[in-house]
Image (tube, rainbow, N blue to C red; front, side, top):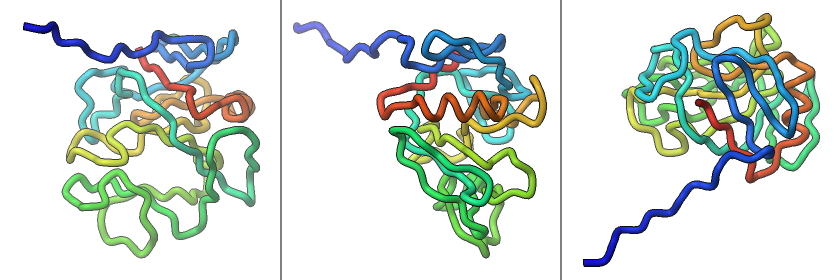
Length: 176
């Protein structure tokens, strides 16, 4: 019988963002950050307020062109006034960007506050979502230092901008 071989995940490097409950490190720098009010979990559920432990890719970013610009190697799209993110676990568009009008549970991406002026999307339960496993796990701006999120990772505005400008398509978000 031949042994089962599995592809090994590459170990964390300075080019990955490594997040713990104490903060983040990326490219030799340390950053204070906020995580979910439910802490870090290996069993993420919709509405638990926890940040999902694991290694996540970041397929792209969203930004408010009227408030922010974006430079860097990561793919980015503008957030428009009708842009929403579906968080209705039983809807076919669960954990996907949708447009208003939308009758089901969702988050507004085009917010009045600055939290989503610049957003990095993670591949947590995306693009193919498992119902109730959690949605909209982003990197975005924090409300204030260490103020917990609903599961996202949040940074000070200038730190988030610096991080985004240094992301590459191979950069991973590793939540420990």
